[in-house]
Length: 142
Image 1 (tube, one colour):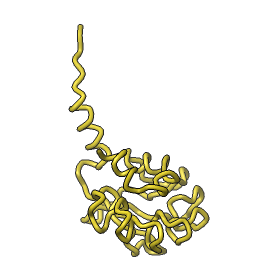
Image 2 (cartoon, helix red, strand yellow):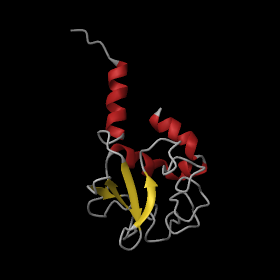
Image 3 (cartoon, helix red, strand yellow):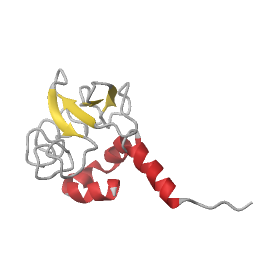
């Protein structure tokens, strides 16, 4: 039996799984998860996107950016940072209705850790993404 591979179908499936079925996902950090940290899967032109290096949440110099290695949410040693492998208070991922998709963290022992494809990809490459956010947006989404 010969099977034809539908590349376009495979690509659409991968993109759909990366985007969590089309839901727009947001990050919230801080002690009570009340500090907005940006949109996880918005495009790089969206002002709230973590992929917009000119916006608040994608800029590596902004205090509310997960890409700011000297800020609260981007410093590997801060317990509120997703890049802290032992962090106890990482950001949460929610949609616009407030549905919880997990804790956004490298800490594999954190119960309810976000483990959808996009999150796992960001965890794996976060150190490289930090250096060129918009380039990585293109690699992941396009």
